[in-house]
Length: 498
Ligand code: ACM
Image (tube, rainbow, N blue to C red; front, top):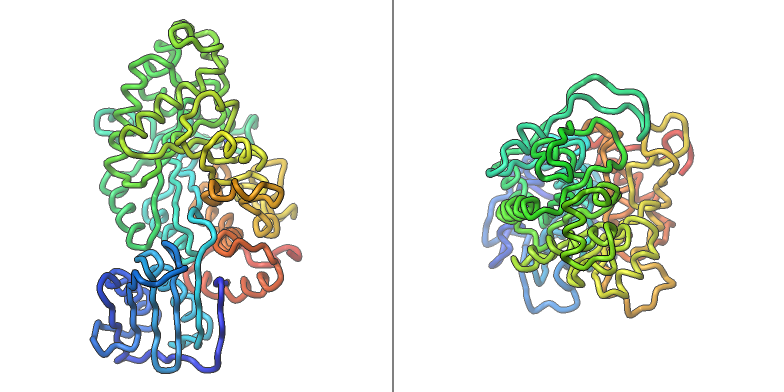
């Protein structure tokens, strides 16, 4: 649902000879529109000066920000205008949505003016717990763009797998991308499937993904996890850990492992080399360096950690958590990128204030981070973790235990809780959904978790409004578009009323 929509009678009918006219700078959006509409209608939609679908980049337009657009569909013309390219791309997605509403080559007549409230609207995809083929990741980017979500946060490394090749460290993917088997059921389960699992992208695939996403207006933010969630890297290079002579396999369990990166210079040299290559592949202004779930038990017994604590004048092993992230975060800042960290433990003494913090626990942690001067991205688990089942019905597939995140929960998520002082609003970049994949081994499982809950997050993060009335009916219509794209979504009202 756009910010402002006026529907009038009639429709614009696409024909075999309908053409597109794109003015200076609007050509990439025109190419995208042509791609979608050719596929849907079979019409060629060439470029022509006399075209009746007109796309215009007009930097003089005001009040539309970086991503807003205006779209006028009348019976004889379509006029899409925006001050910036991102707005045109969103307008193209609105046209794609409109084309699906009536069936046949008709666009209903509308007058739309549409501006998002939050600049960060995204989804995290965990390709470490289960590797997802690049073709699916590209398809997922297209589904994000369809919903005007503008960030894919790609969780590339974890205890259970390392998915990005790094030229200087071939064992990361030769060893770290493969595990012998996977746990069946939640953390602590005694059952394993006995089936090897692995996969890694090529650099060309990742570069291609970034370029494809850029055409759709989506930024791919990579995440390299540290200091915890690092067992795949430690399996490949044990000397990076706290006990260099210990051999740890790539983890086959779910949960939180005690194994962390060590704090020796060699480990930081490694991380800098990795992040240098990450920055080459991913132009994203922000790079995620993990930071969550960092039990410090190994640092309490490691002689190297003791030397580091003394040399840096730290209060103890717990303080190494923030110190570690600051050291790596400063490296990114020196290279012109903003580090992003999960909010966890007590990082208040560590992180550079320029780091953005991703709030995954209770929203109140967001306010503490804002008070310390950080920008925040709100991703609280109770409303944005789509790896929780979407209902308590017995038919629901296995998900993260001990919780349910319903469509309603996601729709009512407020990235800026109403009790927060208004002066903190500007520091909230926005919000994103989390698709952890311990219990989602296949692309179709991810789609089932994502849709329709991601539609709810997309609508509210764009509109900044949680008025549920009308949403279920819109969603039922939207299901037709999801079906046309063969998305494996959970139908509204499956198993039980929503
Ligand atoms: C997290 O769920 N550990 C970020």
